[in-house]
Image 1 (cartoon, rainbow, N blue to C red):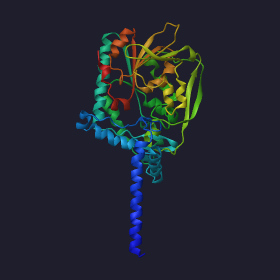
Image 2: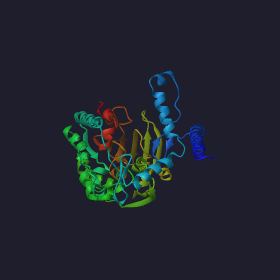
Image 3: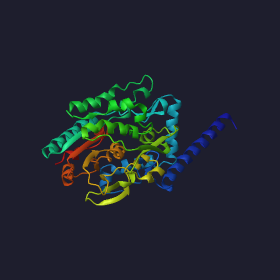
Image 4: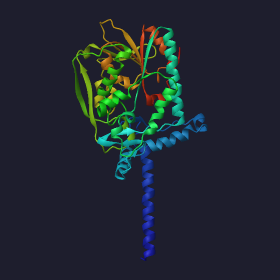
Length: 383
């Protein structure tokens, strides 16, 4: 066999193997069970879309079909981890918009668009409108904004990395005229212990710092009840870990505050009709400790309405208009008040009417600044 024929034979074999591989992958996408959720990424996956005249004509079917092929590709988690590992080997220091900081910190860059900054203005206006309407009814409102890891972990950012752009979000809030308690200084004083290395939330230490700083604003004396901190997992891998695709880094400790009398409290998840759909003692749904999303141990995760009370005691109830940052504050605030937590990203009724119906005279509005930049909080402004 001449050299030319050998080369041609090798080309044919290689081409055939490549075609077989592509065909096998294509078939496996349909043969293997479809996954609707990725625990590793903590996000929903696109299953095979339904075909209708409307979604085909509007392009939704083809868009969802492309997402289906991306989300259901075999060995997806392995391939994502392989890409993240390759980025580390190439010393790029980031992947999927997440920086690999010092001491194992994964820090989201939060590169916002003009639409995000406009969203910040609109959500600030909704908060201000809520404050105005609440004041007319004699309801006292305290507003606070939780920072991001990139706002408070300067010393853990990669060398020579500039994060000056991050100030624009805070400038946008100030230019919108929003009056709020800025928690950045408190978090910076706590240091790395205020923030998870692999998640976008503050730790229980960070939540306690916010609890101390908000005491004068909301009106309570920080409690002196005996509290201990239990390490319930040493392999916590949060949302930033999921977003990064860098799965070669290890997990971290996840701690819960254990406060005397915890079992005397009742947490209820409530539907839009005021009906309790789930309840449990204390403030923790510990079934989540067996899952990747361990942060949802607090209150059982996100829900439009959650009520935390101490049955058998007459106590003042306050309303929290919030995102998930407030969940880790609950064990501390519950020592002073019954709590009605409203996530206005999902609760579309009037928060003001809800406060009136429950005889509430104090409201704490607490969102992360990233939520204000990326979510729709306009329902908060409804009368």
